[in-house]
Length: 462
Image (cartoon, rainbow, N blue to C red; front, side, top):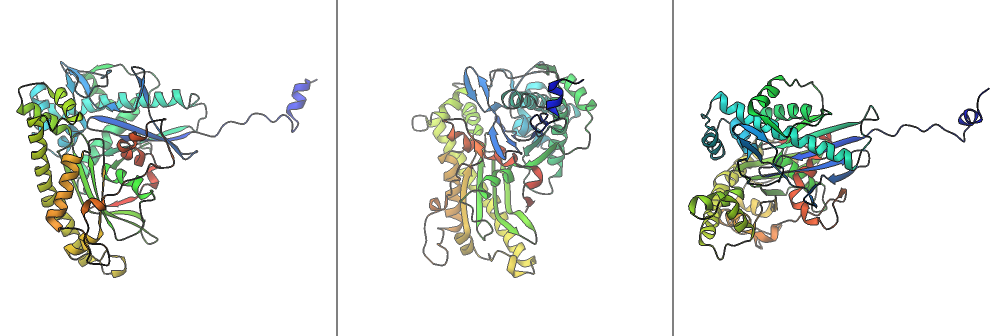
C-alpha cells in the first residue's frame, strides 16, 4: 500500500515541481584595443547586464586587453594594467594589421622588434594568432564563469541552457573578408577552449598556444558571430528616442578608442521591401586613437615612460605641458585632413553613385550637392577615448572647412556644427550598477552586440 504522500502527489494539490525555463544568454563582447567590455543579455527576460568583476575591492568592468609576454611565454595580466612591464598590448590591432598584410605597421613593428620577428614571416603570423588565442580564451572563460557565479549558478542543469557570443571586429567595407575570416576563426577556437569546464592555466608558452590553435576543431554551430564595430555602435542609437527611424538624415559617427578612430556616415532604413538596414556612405578606420597621444609623447620626450604620459593625458595637463600640447595639436590637424580626404571624399562619391544607379526615386536620398549635406548631416561621438580636443575639434573643424556651416532644413538659415551633435540616452533595458551611469559611454558597442545576432540590422557598406 502506498504512503499518504504518494497519494497526495497524484492530486491537484501536489503538482511535481516543473523544470525551470532554459537560460539563453547572449554575450556582446567588445574586443578593445586597450580594454575589453562585455554586456550580456538574458534573452528570456529581455534585460541586459554589464559584466563586472572584483579588482582590489572595487567593482570593475574594463578588462585589460594586454597580456604579459616574457621569453615567448604568455601570462594573464592579473593587475589589469594597460601598460604593464613585459606587456604585449594592442593585440587586436596587431591581428587586424596581420589580416590586411600590413606587416610593418606601427603596432607590428614594435612586436617585431621586441620579439625578434621577421615582417611577413610565418613565425610572425603564428605568434600574433597564438597571443590572441591565449587572450580571448582566458578572457571569455573568465567572463563565462563570472556570469554563472553571479547570476546563473545552476547553468547547465537544464540541457537546453545555452550561451552565445558576438564579438566586434574592425571591418569597414565588404571587400575586407580577410579581417572578418581571421577574427571569426580566432573567436570560434577561443570559445571552444573557453567553454571547457576545467579552469585554464594562467600561463602558456607560445608553442603551446600554436598547437592549441592547430588542434582545436570547431563544429559548425551558431554560438559565435562577429559583427562590425561601427554597426554595433549604431544599434543603441537606432533604438533610442533620438533616432527618427526611417529618414533622410545622414549620421556621422566618430568612435574613439585607444588604438583607432572609427568613422562612418550612414542612414537608417526600415522598409517592408528590404527590412531594417544600415546604409553606409562612408566607413574609415584611422590609427589615431587616444593611445597614440602617449606613445608620441614618449617618443618625443626623454622623461617618463608611456604610463607617465597616459596619466598626464588623463589629467588633462595640456595647458602646463608643451610636449603634450604640441602632440595634441598635431594630431588634431592630422585627423582633420584625413577626415576631409578620406571620410568626406567617400561620402560625396557614394551619394553620387547611389543617386545615379537607383532607378526608384521614391527610395533614394535626394542628395546631389554639398548644400544638401549641410542640411542633412548630424553628428555623434562615442568611445572611451573620446576627448573634446583633439577628436571632437577635428570633426567639427573638418565639417566647417569642407562644407561651411550647416543649413536648417527648408530654409537658408545657417547654424553651427556643434548644434548638430546628438547625445544618446541610456537604454532602458540595461541594468547599470548604482552610481555607474558614466560607464555607458564605453559600453555602446558591447550593448549593441548583446542583441540576438539574427535580430541585428543588415549592413550595406560603401
